[in-house]
Each structure stands twice: as C-alpha cells, then as structure tokens.
Image: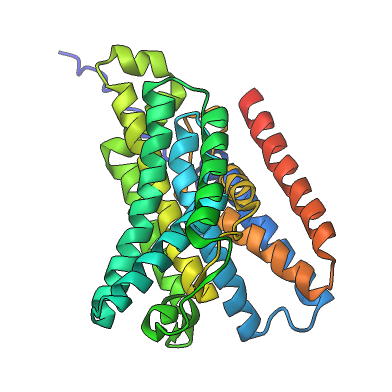
Length: 340
C-alpha cells in the first residue's frame, strides 16, 4: 500500500519591511509630504535667520499655529463632507467680541473671577456653535451652496462684531487669569499648545472613532449612497457644521486671551489659511478624505511660513502673496490626488 504523497502548504507570504513602508507611504503620502515640507522650511529659515531656532521664537510660532490648528480642525470635518466654511476668519472676531461683552457684564454684576471667565468662555463657544448651527441650517436644510451660505454668514459675523463692539476693541487686561490661557506658559511651554493638543485629540477621536466622523466621510464620498443606506444626511451635515463652528469658538476664545481684548477686526484671511492647512494635510475639497494629524501639521506649516517671513523682514503684502501661492499649491495638490 503506497503512502500518499504529502502536499506541503505554501508558506505564508510575509510582508517585507520594504512593502510595509511602501504601503504606509502610499496611504499617507499627503501627510508625509507636508511633514517633509515643514522640515525643509525649518532648515531654510534656520539658515536665513539666526533667531529662528531660538526657544522664544518657537514658542511664538506654536502660539500662532494654535489658532490655525483650531480653525483647521473644524474645517477638516466640513471639508470631509464635500462642503466648505468661510466663516472662521471673522468668526474669530465675532466670538471674541461676544466673550468680551459677557465678561464685562459679569464683572460689572459683581460675579467672582472664576464665574466671569467661565461665562465668557461659554459665551465664546456658544457664539461659534450658533454660527455653525446657522450654517448647518442654510446648507443642510435650505440646501444652499456652502460657499455662498458661509460667505454670507462671514459678512454677518463681521458686521455683528462691529455692531456689538461699537467698532472698537473691548479690553480684557483686568482679567489676568483669563489672559494666561493665551499668554502664559507651563513648564516653559505656551499654554495654547496644551489647548490645541487636547482639541486635536478630541478631533481625532471624533473623526476616526465616532459616527459624526464616519458619516462625514461617507457623505463626502457618496452622499446619495449614504442617504439610501438609511443615514439622515441633512441632520449629520447640520451636526458637522455646528461642530466646525464650535472649533471656531475655541479659536476666538484663544485669540481674545492672546490679544487681551475682543477685537472686531481680527481674523481677516484666517479662513483661507485654515482651508489651506486642511488641504495640505490630505483633506479633499471634493469630500470623502480628511486627516486630523495632517491638518495640524498643515497649520504648523502655514505658521512657520508666516513666522519665517517676519524674521526675514518680508513686507506684509508679500507675505500675503506667498501664502496665496501656498493656497494655490494646496488646491493643485488636491486636484492631482483626485486624478490618481
């Protein structure tokens, strides 16, 4: 009786280190590119200016980046749906003015400092969330084009900031505890960095581990298919725009603390920087793709360019030209990604 021949099972194909690296680079090509760009900028500005690598300058750079990061985080969710939001720029002014008015009122009413600060911060966040709610109603329920709807809201926010403040900054210099949020340091690190780290962690969790992130990406990938699968697309779009407005409120609170006032004219062009940061970080303007980590690094790239330009004494008008080119580059990269 012959012994049946044994057939050896094929050895499992193991992924080589090279294959793993290639796969990672393909999946995260946008994030890798923006990190490499940041490293190149750091090297270039370090050579161009002896002050760039100083600890004090890096602290100032991260403080500037914190506002861009907060705005970019909110826009990450909106862009994921295939929408856009132009309110963050002057939304900062509106939320900061609302915060300042409430803090002044609370202090005049004899409330203690902790309560004054708490009410002011809540007012700033509520003002941002309200803007987001209105944007959500206009886009999701009234079916207005996101760019037109949010452009109109941007003008409304700017006008309301002027009306509420009487076109003048509302000083907050007497609230030292509140000012430490944007001006103080802990263990030598700017407090704003801790705020943006917390905000980025929350945003990452929401985008990658919760329904709002999952549905935002699904809506951006194929809105009709998402609707047919039983998802209430209008409601989730509303939630996304509200969330975006809340992040704008956070940025407004931080900006008011940095400037020690609620200024009605602050934030011009910030929405463009935030959009550029999100797109540089891998978000697609057509929706369906977004990255919180990429948006954070993209915002730091924008802040690095502005910081380096100041150190090199580049005039403000040329800084705007340079950042405009960065925005164009971000849109071009997004177009190239869509064609692949």
